[in-house]
Length: 329
Image (tube, rainbow, N blue to C red):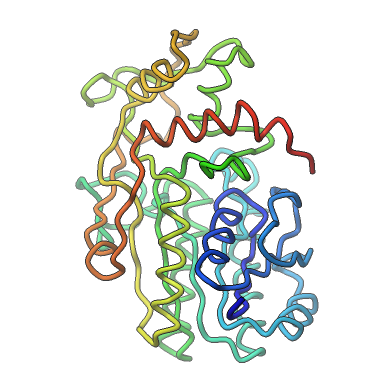
């Protein structure tokens, strides 16, 4: 294997898929994770170092042991609703942990970091699709915490030469087609696994939050992007930095949104039958439509998503039907 790459949060959903792609690209991913939202069994392509990104001494020891060429930073609390209930915890973990990590990296002589950010930094769209210059007005402490880290990283590059690529991804979905890893959260809050659980009879219904939006069928539009496409983009961003290129920001999505009803229809096609739905009111802060403009990632990184919605559903269905049931902490 080639260079070691420290992957914070590498035992989580997107982090683990990125470790898979890093290993396939010839790197050795070193997962650094406190396992509060991750799974030890997801760490299959390199060593695991258990630790918290707020623990400077632990980071110093791990960085000295593995001497990574760069860092890919996923570790964060990420539940939008929970961030409204526990804003202090999100700022402590996401912002405080990131600053501790950056300073530990600098002490170790590391000046390259890929940051897994989010479209939640944009807030409600003022134009669609949303490009990287779209105004950033987050609607939640989660989105604001990610924006703060982006601003810290911009200052670090301008003032110290610490370079970073920020990846603002839209709705991560799907699973490894070979069923080795997939999406699993406790509790589960994401639409696709919840809808699949309803289709499989593991939940009594799937809830539609609002059907009176100004969209083609009244339900929210979201840009679902396959988790392995996101992982590929993280590897390309890493190579961008290793090639000596300056820090920058990229959106990651498909550029094609699907409504919630279209998502339900795709899952019904996969299951072969309808499943129970419940209509509820709109959730506060839910924009009608979120769709990425990804031309910059295509033009500069050479990144193009390979998987569409039906493939995302197929891979997620296979995972939830088999792989997730075998998973143990």
